[in-house]
Amino acid sequence: MTAVQRGPVADPDAVRAIAAEAEAADGVAPLSEQFLLGIEGDGPHLVAPAGYAGVVVPPAGGPGAAEVVVAPSGRRRGLGRALVTGALELVGDGGTVWAHGDLPAARAVAAGLGLTAVRILLNLRRPLTGAEPAPSNPRACACAPTPAPRTMRRSSP
Image (tube, rainbow, N blue to C red; front, side):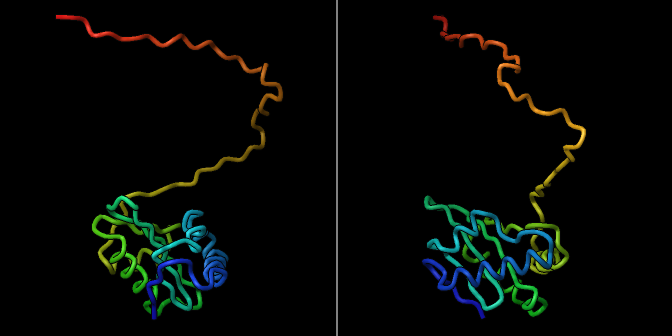
């Protein structure tokens, strides 16, 4: 079902297509830029016909991180669980699995594996209509001079 690969993924375009298909269905990109670029890196990677898990392990050791994507056509068959389980084995103790978006399927897989959210990132936006335009002339910005740093010395006892 899944195979661990070291080195570049044999068919990186297939993995990118899985990610694009998932993004179109879910409305959120399933892999960060680091993991998309890592598809052609040394891995390790878990690859299945309808899914992918990228793993990053720090060269100096310590816990790693993983991101997982399953194409909509491969969902509800245990593939996500298999990929996350395999990724957890590769990231080591204290490793993390990132989920982009707050999707019910990702929550279900996490709950089934006893995983809990430890960090939630929010993407906050606001419309720019009605906002003050940025000054086009940098001289129009007022800047206060920065005082010179002081040297601190230890007094003798």
